[in-house]
Length: 165
Image (cartoon, rainbow, N blue to C red; front, side):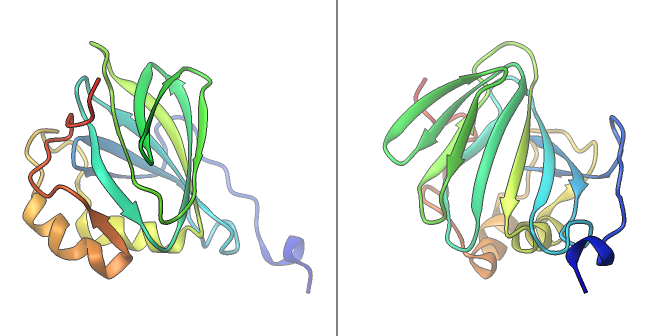
């Protein structure tokens, strides 16, 4: 049976999709691996000013970032990339990366994970309820669970804005 015959069309409008909070970010799950036949998962991320993710490595999945609004400083390996609206970066598995929103307003991006199931399961395990205050993450729980999904945070004491600006 062809892939086209096994998948149904999926559509989610603005603000639609399951929502969780991870570290400082509001995450809306736009497409799950069940939606895409295992090909990928797609998340919309909103990051508050000075928020983001500390440097880490994902050993099992590749990550693609596309900035929808605002700006991100993204660490990729040893290089810092300044991505404004419309900017894109592909981060292969095994590459150190992290990001911060350096501006005074929120920033938004799409994150495409391939394969998607690993990061979806990670969000299920560590994602906090949507609407939790962005500066109150349970980092101890996140650091304890991350290795199960091949995620290695390099600086456990890092604040989300630890990327040099």
